[in-house]
Image: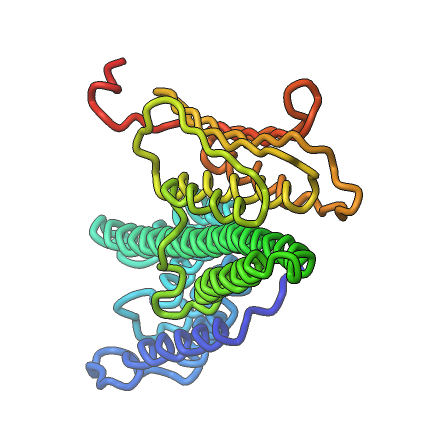
Length: 387
């Protein structure tokens, strides 16, 4: 069952029909030679009947062409004025080539067009009329094919553009998701580390406020300093979320900041050592942030969950990799609260993002806890490329 064409298509068909009707009317209104029989209303009416089917050319193009041909055959006995061109049949052929299905186009090429080209046999039966008829109908069909090809190309380009836009949106969403995950890890590391240090200092301060007032003052100063540092870093992260000018462009942690980080934890009462072996090599800024955050998260976990007497942070450089290890000798504190595990998950995500690996588990001999991360180093010199 055929569906009714959309209104814009019907409007176009009506306009085309009106234009063709105007064209076929011209021979009826121009003066004729006295030797030629006068035009009759019957001939004009039959001419109009051969044009009206074009109103339905988008709905049933083959049926329209057959109706036009039938009206043309009925027009012959009326001996009306001739037309310079077979306007209505040409429009119908163009429509079949441009909008018709494969079967309709094959029927037109192998049956209807040959019949149209044979029509001059009923008129002059001259070779030039055969050639002219074949040319105009052939050109109408070719133009229809070109129109259909252009429409298909335009549709393919639009679909490609829509697909690219969908891909761009999907990539933007993935990038936003990665950025949200990165910010979440950063905020977790900042808050967890700062709150853990403040809790340790806050618990130690009241115990020595009478016996060692200076130590209590240092503890409270450390709480204030840790809080201020956490606020500065949080403001920077919130600047990223709010897309403020300059937001997120502040200095990021680097390997040079590890000594200050270790000293900060050491002031909280946790004995921490930092050892570096091998020859340090250039490391990308984002990889340095990863190393810093891994050490920070590992030390925070020790403060929160372990009753350790010693903690060792070790950076081991090799020509191909940087190995980072944080070990402690303590057992899990009975007063510590179980964590969510997000810290260790964040460590693994950071390592994987740089093509590295991460592991966490009991330390040597099953005592304490050990967090280890290995990051590959990029080749940075021609001499290393040739190795």
